[in-house]
Image 1 (tube, one colour):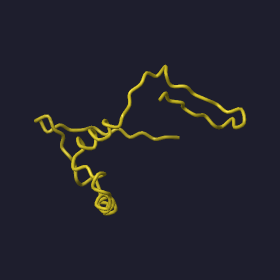
Image 2 (image 1 turned 45 degrees about the vertical axis):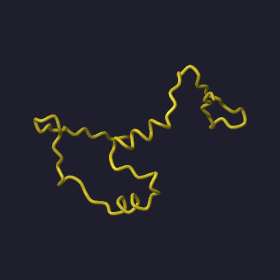
Image 3 (image 1 turned 90 degrees about the horizontal axis):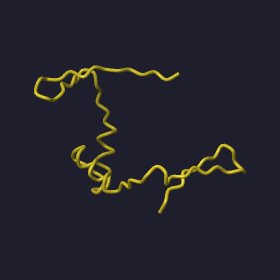
Image 4 (image 1 turned 30 degrees about the horizontal axis):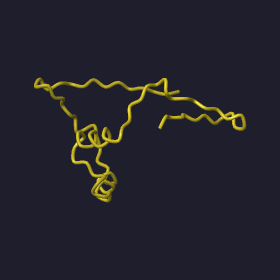
Length: 83
């Protein structure tokens, strides 16, 4: 069974949100993995990451996407995208 925890976000009154640093933890591996990435995979801000992802994104109508099943493998489904 999946468990879902909903946490309330408290606004600081200026439109931002207050971060409770006592609830997090520091994971050094994340920092080392970021520094070991090639320069074209480092994003200094979430907006830069978003912009890079959107530049590679293709939007298409859902009616053009087909689902294919194989008679040989009943467990295998494939999404077929145009182009």
